[in-house]
Image (cartoon, rainbow, N blue to C red; front, top):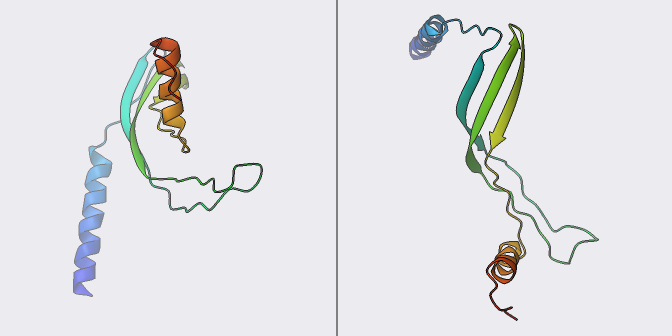
Length: 116
């Protein structure tokens, strides 16, 4: 019981220190705000095979990923802003999609002969 009380006291002291150390951050009309954050997605799912109308044996795999996010905002008034959030795409489709895109680039952009 004594260990638990010490633990609770330490957590309360940490929360109080963090609460008092944060200063007020008020924005005014006409200001621009920019920030960069890291977004981690950690899904806990499993996918089975898709049903019709997909090809037999088609599956999806959802994995954890960490990507940066960039955000910019403009303050129209003291309490009104517009924010734009930009992220790095992380979507990959299975079933040879990467190879198909590489073939299209090789044939159409680089002018390489078609590989059969």
